[in-house]
Length: 420
Image (cartoon, rainbow, N blue to C red; front, side, top):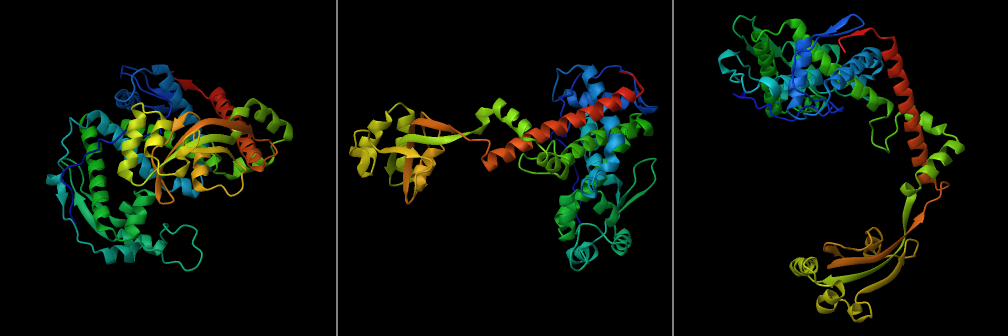
């Protein structure tokens, strides 16, 4: 098993720092929240890391956000589902390491070769044998290892390392598997040795980052504080996903579904009337087209149109369709959304904006360029099932957001906070 010599951690900072935090590091006090301390030096490292991607945030906003994250995480982490907790520890280690590298990566030596000891050979077959799901029938989570699998994986040593003045570290397959993301666990179960080598490299490199941070004088409490800041943010993000505030609009969580089912007609009508523009659909368009034989010709004519050649003139000169002789060259007439038997050309025109010319598209063996001259939209009624579904979802999200904010406000109101 090969272990890479150097590690490039220059990926973007975790996208979960959503509030736009970022400011120059400065001497600032620790945060003490209900008696628990978030060390000043841990906060300063976060500030420095985020300064590199955003510069104009008020320091007070950052500290308030950290307090909110911490209070919420302490309250709701136990409410996370097993699926949401599954990769939490792995994500904390990964994102904390990114913060460290963002600030100190250029100062640190990344060559871990002198410290690696006794890499062990492992076959793809053996990797699969240890980690592959063994349960028969319905499996709630194929990534969970049985007690027997965990015990066996713990005996599979992968590599060791020892940094100056530190005890020898050994990495076994169970540690690597449990420290991996869901995708990493899938790859390991499939016997992907190359991917496993990358995971081993990242694991050892992360340990080296923490070792070097300690050499710079960061105490264990300050290192744990960095992990705590990251964990708080991740828990908040996962919780909001779980209750339905960060999910795709068409994805229902149980709590969101229950609220949506109870949205009253009056609440739905009120939201619908306030957002009528969101529930409009195309009624009809007036359009024309230009037909060409091949991609090269289509691209050339399209470029001429973009350079100022009138669409009607382009149709007269180049179109292969007989309707080029019409009073409006290439006219497709009035196309209504409910016309029976619409072909793909006309369906395409219906989804195009008014006053636009499409790029060439291959339709029924020819290349077509479509111009939409006019478009009439129609108001979809609240009684339309798809409209009512979306309205109920939107109202439920508003209610869910209000409930979440009320819970957060209550936590803040009852908390004893020093250092803001």
